[in-house]
Length: 139
Ligand code: UDP
Ligand code: MG
Image (tube, rainbow, N blue to C red; front, side, top):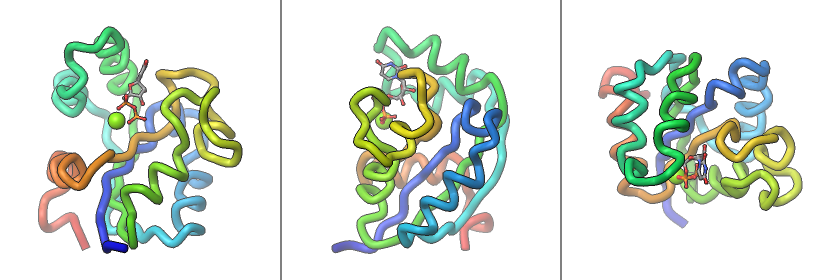
């Protein structure tokens, strides 16, 4: 077990559908600590930069437009194995394959508009946290 930090986003669909509180409730109920939090409406170029790792993928253009279509909530979650704990709470990328009781299984109805983002490794967590939060914004 390792104490980790990870970057979570509630995507524009989750914000628009009034699910900020429900998503955060699940994180806190499973022991994840919020260490930073902000609402941001990403300009398209920033959405492109955030998802640059996917720039060759067929879904990149649509995904980046979706991610800049409305405000998102970005937060740093901390805890034992926080990266995997968060991924487990999110469920699989495709909501149809997500385990029952996960955020995506319970709320997502679209592969792209799947409510939440979570870092997938310590390296991506570090880069994604730095993308959103400077030192002063992290407790
Ligand atoms: N995505 C999509 N179609 C796909 C795969 C991914 O629209 O076939 C979107 C979806 O919003 C996903 C995001 O692209 O959350 C990033 O994809 P990734 O494979 O990193 O999934 P995640 O890490 O979010 O589970
Ligand atoms: Mg990913």
